[in-house]
Length: 349
Image (cartoon, rainbow, N blue to C red):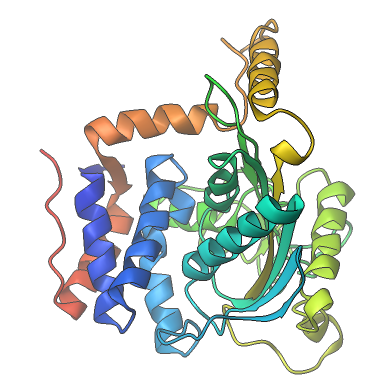
């Protein structure tokens, strides 16, 4: 498989120009591009610039709204219901995290449900926003069903991603960010771009049969069996159902289906200073992480990693040497470049 490397700032500028070309404000286009390339920098290529063609298709069919009117519909000192109006996911989710952090500074905790957003990219970005402000951050997503609940051979829940991050001292803030499926659909799409099969146990085809053909994969499988599928189900109860915008039930029992690409989400922030001295907390997090890393590695491992550590190493390498993109992703971006008249950056030599 051939890969080409691109300088991250040039790639980000290209993506921002693409989205500005299709009607988004310069500011919103830049936010979207930044979050996508942030994922690529950390090695989360499934949530990076390979998403651009799908986003453009969603805009074309009326899913993503270039002129969205984001608004807070309900609010208390601690909570907010935010109507996204089909805005870019990163735009409204950044706004939501800033909103809950402001609330956390006042009352110790902030919790927001975002209704009618679109794909939000890598959720770890938003949890880390809070950690960088000495807060604990949490974010999770709900969407129409794409994952089979434990014991089923049809989609019934979404592979709802969950991200949590907390501040640290000398060490990088730990960032947990994973879907409730064995792998996110973006990883299946990445396998398509790379022209490789997916591992057994990742997905089912349209008829509910196990498959390793990335192009045939239609239904994801949960990790941990009933544990992850139960978690995904409960996320729907805390987000979509909470704001009368159910995304699973219309597919399970019939009814009006949501606009394609629509999802609901929760973001929350907890002000560490409400509970303890921030400097002491961050020092204790460092000690906790150091303690985990001091454990003897299991057979086949050279070290014990903590959440976010591998991604930070990848980021350092890619900041220095460029972001590698598979041929399939590059080909798709070149189609976008040609169709919109936006110059794609040259790969690094």
